Length: 297
Image (cartoon, rainbow, N blue to C red; front, side, top):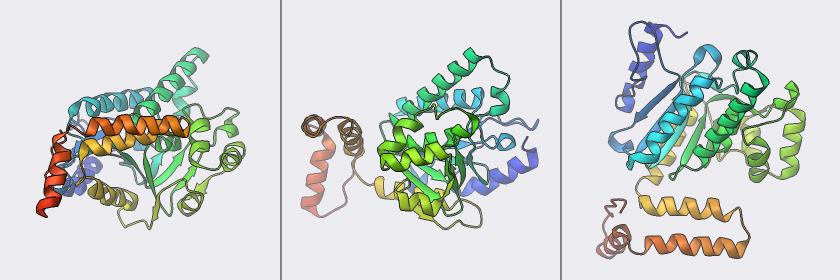
């Protein structure tokens, strides 16, 4: 388990992100929660960061980690202030190693099935967050760790990251959406090869295949992908919040249907924007040659 001194050091390191607290339950008894959550402030206001924080188990998905992720996603669903979400790791060189196989070994077949169903539901909830969700892959993302990244809108990887759906090595298949989301992102034949072979690829290969949007050099603190995600968030934040949400909805829902049905979805999303104050503000600001002041209404 992470020592108290290590936790304080990490907390100090993250202070430049305007008070990124390890967790509300942090105490001098060295206890810590499995998920770090914070709303950034200053020029990054509107960004919510969710950090995986199980260094002793390489951020593997345990029942408690999944429970905590559900709790913070609930918070985002109803907070009305989040405009971009970034998933990252608090553990250097590890994004998420997938399911906690040590914990799973002690489960009954029914408990395993229930856990996988709950994990699959978590991925669906990540995908359905109304605002853009970015994954900062600054390390190993295997199995469920890659599956949660696949559920994000935008993925950024460091060159030294390692990614793969490796479940067939364990005589199982990806069970949290990997068999469905990977072929929708890549050429289906490439996705099949990656899953059949359990191949692990680095950040550069992932970029070449189109699995990630950007590949970046790793920095000294192991947060290269996270900093790139912050840069992308900075480009999103000035835009109309409701318009960005409607764009996400139109794209996500439209991809699942034929073109003409997708155009109807786009029309319905656009219709919701027409009566907003932000749309009027955008036109007025353009006319007055100034920056718009959007309120998300």
